[in-house]
Image 1 (cartoon, rainbow over the protein chains, first blue to last red):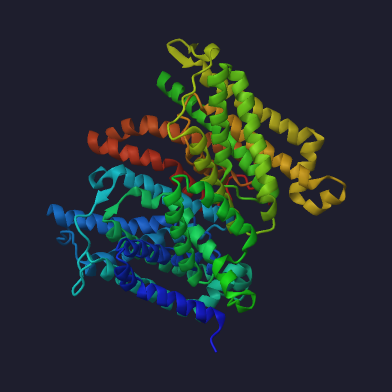
Image 2 (cartoon, each protein chain N blue to C red):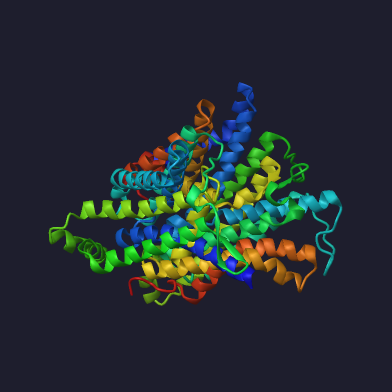
Length: 328
Length: 304
């Protein structure tokens, strides 16, 4: 007998898997591109949930890592297209459009940024942590605005999507399945992580940091590693997003995107990993639907969020799964 | 030298605006433990209502009164309808709900006033410049903004230090139940404090109207600066808000004015200009990160 939670997860997985063929049958390829966007945002939101839901690290600067991932792809593509080397010393690196190079590099750059930002931010807690993560994201935002070479304020267009052996990412369905694979891998890995000893320490520190420290565990390092994992996953999401829209701009690092990711996590359900996926889907679909009827869709979205916070305390996923199925 | 004084005054004026914003935000956080991202919306509402009344009536005084009143009323309504339900919740819920409020107010403004920015003219009596030193004329309006900000700061200090309601507010911040048990209507008190915070934001908005463009989303850029101010100053502390606001106002203004020239002495002109542009935008965030790494609770932490 399946639990309600498993039933919902199976249904969700089935929908996500069968979406491209269904969209083809219905003759609306646009749905696939929307679904790719949802899956990518779901990855970014789920990575933020590692921080928010498990470590109680309220980061309002998560968009910075999305932006760094996106810009890594954008800048490497730019140099490949302009046939102008990115680095000449200590070795020659000419830029690249190969997904095998740009995607891992995007995750790596975001991980590096997360290591630096996390190491400094985790010295603080509470509102100060919220603000310092926001401050770092704003710094990067202004930094990329000032990079005239890469389009400054206007951003940078990609000539084409990255290439991967055996795949053609220009094809909507194939690109969608790549994004889906990234999301599933991340969820699988994170599920293992949060239920491991490591995850117990992080969750414990999120609940009561003093008690964890009292046990003689230096929770700082555990939190930092979590911060880096979340950052690099967001970087991967950013790299995919750059490929999806074939465009990168500083707007990806703006604090409103961090806010929207946070909204997706809370809307779906904090600390459930699958919740943010649902949250991303609901948020983007709602945005899409409302935008069809009125350009002022935010007038409805805003109050919807407020009402969700006040009444659905554990998010939509918690609401669907039911009160007794709490996994934490 | 004259240029330096002029820029110092500009920095002071930005600092005063930031102080008006951060006093309200830090009060609300210090007393109610509420993170209110929608504080910038009250600033925007003040500016919009002020600009509209000024255009219709031609009276700047009326515009200030209307803008301030509108912001205070909207603030009180928001407290009663939304934030009252979130006092006992975690910060994350408050961030989310007030993020929803930002979306709502920005879009509502676009529905009512359209997408074009409004322009608000400087009141006739204050449109000239005053010779504050030989060779240094300074716009009267900006001086008036500085003066009003200082008056408000003194008023706030008197209210908190000397009056009965100030005493109740201070008591309410340290022990809500106890003050309630002593017969103070704590719900009303909170609504009043929140309304007062919104009122100050509205005042900042009306006064900034003639200096900046009045447009939807104008609240967010100042909101972020305001958060920087209260985090630098120490959350919940009015004294911290004063110091933080002046620090941020000065660093931001002076950075934009003098960094290009300073960097040009070391770098080539083009490199210097682009480096200065990005450094001056980033300066306050660098300042904040540095202060937090040095003092993780800000310069003047309010509680212990």
